[in-house]
Length: 369
Image (cartoon, rainbow, N blue to C red; front, side):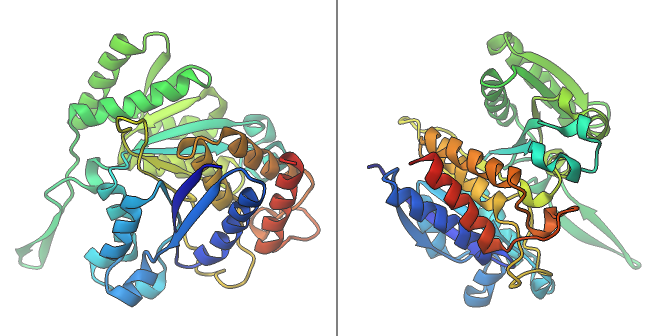
């Protein structure tokens, strides 16, 4: 039985509650003889700031570096609105991405048939929707320098953020997108703002050249980011794999998430470059936030967290059977009509966080018996 090192970072808000449900899945997988998981637990975000005065400690960063994968739940909340910018809860997330070299963020937008009515779009537009958004994660305006606020005097200030990309950064995220498309429907939509941004113009040039040189068998189209946002709510099933930069990827993936019925449904994977053994640093996390308004009430939706664990099975642990079973278990539970409060819709009642986790584990037992 293979053994893997996993760092669990529950974080803030609903993080500890949904992490507990992911641990139930891990415990079952061990019991079923799928794999053994050596789990370390650490602090990130506001929880780390309260104890260490930083958004993630050096000790927990060392644990992250030594792990086969990091599973993070959520960071942030109004409690920490007044802390210094450099140690805000989100800084822990950004440091993990940067220090682990997690340049490729994979965000699937999948609409389960049982939840099609919960989408903000008509059923025929989203039923069986399956899009993969590939977001560049360690470059662009979030990390570019200079990044500052300058006092100009006379009551005036200037805020500066710098959008910077180099050829190699665009090529490596492009390769991830093209390789994924080859395993899906063989289509990539590359998105930027080449009409008004020099970085966007370079992005388009590099993706076009990479496609011609290495991936001519994959269909490629280019679409400006604002037009793509419009098309996502007009005809989302036209897309297969979307590749875009850090800023636009952040926004477009959130737009895509609402097509599925709830932000609480979507997992994500953040991957680094493969080493000479084919292994990658990786972090997995739900797309949703910490939802402090419902923290501690036992009503949070754990599906995105469990789905993120499923992505870890696929991309870090090479356990595709377990990944497929987790996805099938989630689909089966939803088909049975089980709903947490965020996806209740017209259902007569909703289930708790724990009840949803238990139901998914029960389905896994059937599928992996």
